[in-house]
Length: 264
Image (cartoon, rainbow, N blue to C red; front, side, top):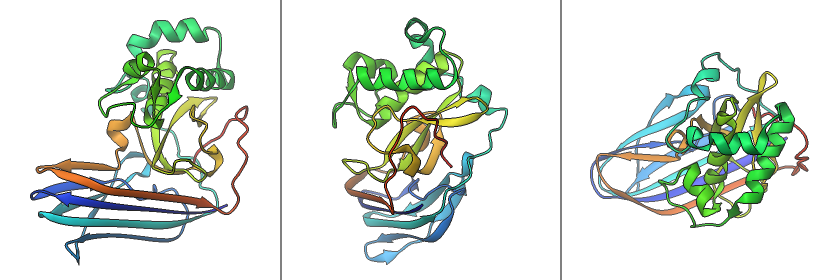
């Protein structure tokens, strides 16, 4: 399987600032080619690559006021091996986090999914979240967590993932968020999905059903959206003027939602 992904960002920077980008694919992906550039007022500026957990590649840029253009492109060849699971993950990804209030949703999780385990539980949570929520662009705020999303009954991919993660943690299943490039996604954008640890390995849940899980490309992995944002800014204000994402695959797979799928 060959996948080609790109992202293009245009920023208006209001003062000297430190920006951390998470747009490059994770370390475990098998790359045929890759390019990444940061251009400020027509002049290319350098970046510092920092490796986060699970091979997440962060690129830190110190920028002065002006117009910045960020361009990333990568060719991913073959299928990457799943990321090795450390024992600490069985603890850290069971804890509640900012956007995944698993303690609040424990009664709901137990009432809806009592007695289910393994793949049957993952399929049930994915179906329940996909049924209860409506995918609606612009319906949620960046500060909304799983509880607010359930009350609103609508959201975007990150909101669907937060609800699934919170429900699974409430049932004692380690779960986390992954940002991905998603061939087949409509509308095209950065995408967010849930990974859950069952039967000795991590498996994908995408309750939106908007892209086949088999073609997804890992970018960043963390507790929730706070850990996998494509852009984090410090010191001064900036405005995101434009964001364009593309993701293509040589042959778009058919996703059988009854099957377990692991993400490399």
